Image (tube, rainbow, N blue to C red; front, side):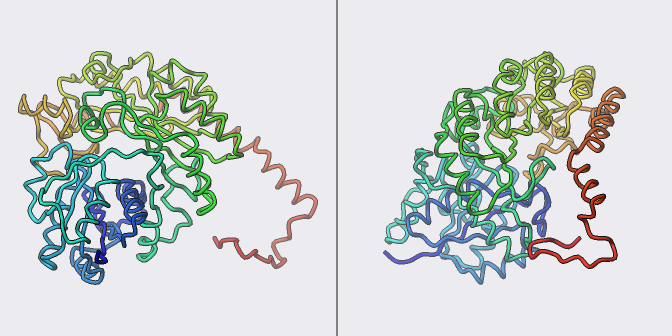
Length: 482
């Protein structure tokens, strides 16, 4: 078996562009898909490296870096929004090295296979999951008998048996291009300090939202497969030892649907002596039904939830098959605030058939919820979903560029929607009610003037423990200049 060199390429620059490293979530988080592929392939002895387009300056810069790496195999992951950059990347690598073997996988390949097959310069397409199939492909190439079929069906791995995600694949590559944060990934809220990471405990979703399904089922199968609590705890230990992480976020679609798993995790997290704060995604209906679970998670370090409230109108929520109601949304928010948890509110406007009055229901609901972080979006018809099919059937789709398959609340997505009104409603939804402004001002005042650390500092000054401004101050080796 000859030695082969494989370069994974992350082409997720549709929304942020080149030279964007460290600029928020889109440009400062790893691709767990590629990180997991890398770990699985390295475990089989293969030489793997990464080119991340976010770290480069231009397509010409990519050409230079690709020529230096000179791989035998190139593999890319592709969401729908990445279609353009992935296609351009493949064109360049085949122009520069026609004999290089090219592989693409990821969500869009699975949910829109026929569309993906139209991309030129592709030798293999891997659908579903790739941790088993991709190393097998590399082995067959190295042994000189690559598969004859172009489409390879990924085997479903046992999540407890595959290696932990290879975060160094990204971190080491980023550092070559100026990434200087002492953090494997970029923190995004003040409650989660650096060093920060994202982790994934499971795959799939048991729910049936019309803006998401059945696409996710096509990728992971129906239901949820979740790693054991012990496996996740073991990864957290490794991350703490290796990166000294101070916080993290579960990237699962909905961590809280399995309350037994959450309870076991919370207990073992505390028993291990962990005190790192974390965020995760949940659902309003789950939070509303199970405040005891929320309380247990808060005791175990949870600092906030991402919650898909989506709409403040019952008819629209039913159309979305969301499984919640405006009343449950409001109840969930109250429970979060009772336990001191931050709320990252995801919500949509411009949903097919939605009226202006129904949009205003959402505006009023979000104002009443008073989230800590607003995350509005204009409904986007994503391929592989039932609402996408509805929009195709009714000739509603305005998206004519794959780059617009983003949840951004800035551009028209479907016909029959007054987007100028939506922009006003988006902004209006983020204006806090007077009563909530007063509450937040009072909370900030109390935090500032009842902070015990503040009084400790004042006492030290009175007792002369702090040096006077005129005296030289010796800095410790690990202190940072300001």
